[in-house]
Length: 193
Image 1 (cartoon, rainbow, N blue to C red):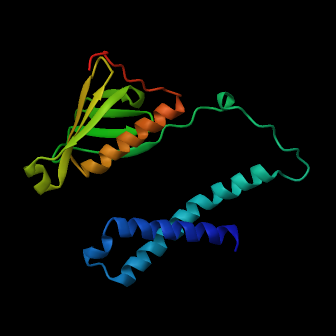
Image 2: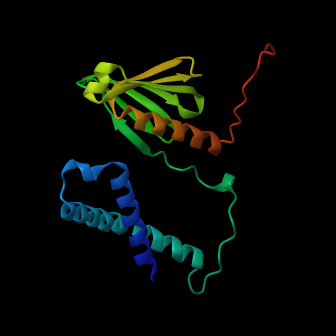
Image 3: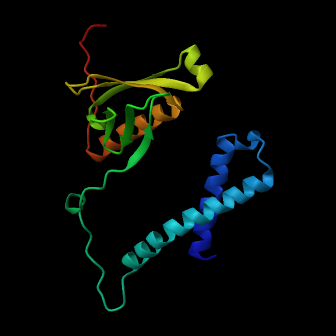
């Protein structure tokens, strides 16, 4: 089996796994429409990824007439570009936006004039998520974040949809940022029991 066929099979399997996890089959969407949607998504993802995979393969296998490049240490690599992991707004809000990236959480407020609060993921100490009864009825929730940032020790991502998923996105991004910066988390005890 060729590499492009393997890639397509892996992408299709992952899409069907997400469909199964999200209970999309219970939405009343016909099986034919689900299969058509999964195929279209697979084609789109493979079309985007294939050039990157091909480029990586030619870089690692070497080009005729060129010597393979020496291994580069991680401190010589340029820093990875910051990527947006999630964007959202509180329910019915037009003046506040939340953006979670691979490095920070941004809270942008304002309509005509804007202000932005940045909280670095490495400074996050604790994450909680709550959904009151009324919020559960509306399908929203609030994520509470405690950070070591002196300007914003407590942050609240209020009335957002899929609060559980946002909580998990923040948690995973925080852990990835700590691993990337070799941050050692150490809990101090006061000695009393």
